[in-house]
Image (cartoon, rainbow, N blue to C red; front, side):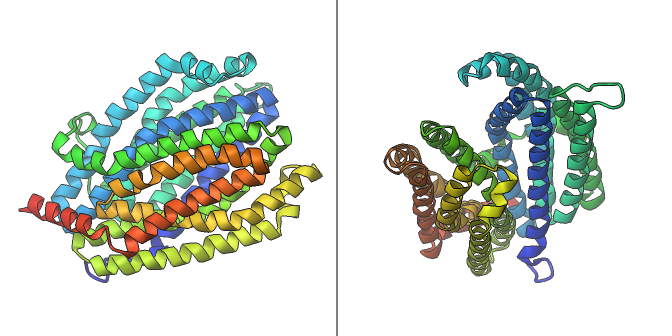
Length: 451
């Protein structure tokens, strides 16, 4: 890979950070609008969001796997193969998105029953979730197509699409939920309808940028055909990460149950503190995604030494960024928490948690950056298998027992210990170059496919 073709890491990470901030702003705006409907509407909004985040795991399997394959093909100058992989995103998204959409329509009430949704919350959440079904299919397309666009290093174009899509979503949601003039609006369902319209706009813009930037114009067959020979490598990269995410969510739910046992004040403190910390981890998340894109291209080009230096630099930058932001959050806790609550007990408890978060967030950096870097080399199995024991024993079981012994700070200690255990294992894997055999295998498969 030539030097000209290798942009600076920050060139990709900057637009990605913008995308993450936009997505979080829309979610916060939706919660604010729902809370102005009623507390029940806010509860339904949060419950449905948990369901949607779980379903989105299927789409992330596709986006992650496709992104890695396309970056490796482009790094190896295999442009025909990269085009095949890009178009595969459409057919695969149709099948996966349709499966999820049908599951939402058919299993709507079952999911709410399983989550023990109170009757008044379920009455609002059920029709709200139904409206999301077609939007989920469009989301599958948008996530996969955005991954392909970023793999071609058009991160700024991806950001432009997200600005248009998210601003449309939030603007329409405000009008459709709250009404206009004498029209009272549709309430909570308006958020889902606005999402459907915004995702349709996102799909149109992705198709336009695909044609203009990559000269990719899908045929009718591309929207449903899946070449299983090409799809295998996508699953090989994406499925292990999906398994880890499902395990993480299950273990985190245990910690949430442990928090709920401590009472309403503890639950509120937990929620507000995590909401604030989302802004702390965004920088390292953006660096991690950018690093994955660059490492995939470097592996495809055979520049393994450059990839090694890039990852070490990314970890260093992530530690500096997250450490500094966590410190600022801890110092500013008495003022920042007043945006959420006026309760002095909650503010004091959150301040303690934010100081503990200095340890938590610096440990999280290794996972956010090294997971993607290892995956981009083809080393997808180790990050998944090495994480399971810590997630179950430390995050799950540990948060339960430490919460009983030390309260909410004990649960935060479990979070931090888990992140550091998993992070140090990934760091050791990278530093001791356990990823090299997988990177060489990936390179050999690319060359074999080119011959």
